[in-house]
Image (cartoon, rainbow, N blue to C red; front, side, top):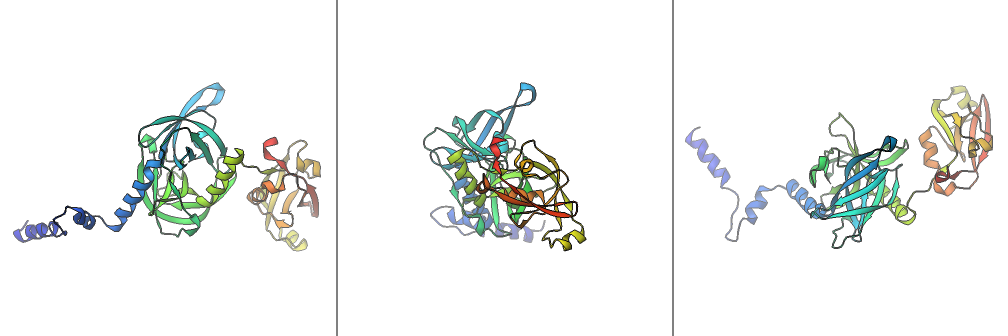
Length: 339
């Protein structure tokens, strides 16, 4: 290397501003805005991120160990995590960021949105600040914090790749309003927070698509707040239930035109539970459901979205095609828990 090149390198390394009070200005110069944002968010949120070690029931009476992440969202010891992290748990041990350990009790879980709340009886806890996921924009910086493979408080950063995605939960129901990000997630990250540059939690990390890279998902805070409040109040989410099994099928164009249908597909009933609301209403296997209270039903996911707690015990009209005829049956959904 020439003397000129060496001199140039020395000049570049010494060009950061210095002052007599210390190295703060030099540090600010070396750290760009991106780095400062990630550091600030990690420092704000990491003290509230916890590791969950879970003893779970397994097949044939055996047990297995699992682990995941969570975060303290209330100073009285309430922790948010994923439902699949604590599913079938016989023991939940929580390790705090400062090394303290505590046993947790399950407050409530909802496998259909993959959210759960647990509680620990521990003092001097740091809680996160909850943000507004409705204000997110595609391309915005986000930070994921969790415990992948047991590595405590691992920080990864990326951007919001897409908003309003849908993702199927382990229960089979479709979760809406999902945030897609390329902030890296690995096994053990489940239940950890997705954070803005301001240190506000705007999502709960839930899934990654393997073997793809950069396809990671989080449950939006707008959903989290609604579900969490119900879990704290009732321990579960109430949903209505009609007792049928079905599959999505396309509708013939002639039937769509003849009956003036607003959907090009429907739900073919392939099974009915004995004495279920749908069976009692007179629906039969082979019927194709196309509407719920006059609202179009093009898929099983549409029907799931309509079957909320407000319709428990309330008569609803299910419109179906039986062969080429259009029929309307009055069904009274029941509480899903009772079946």
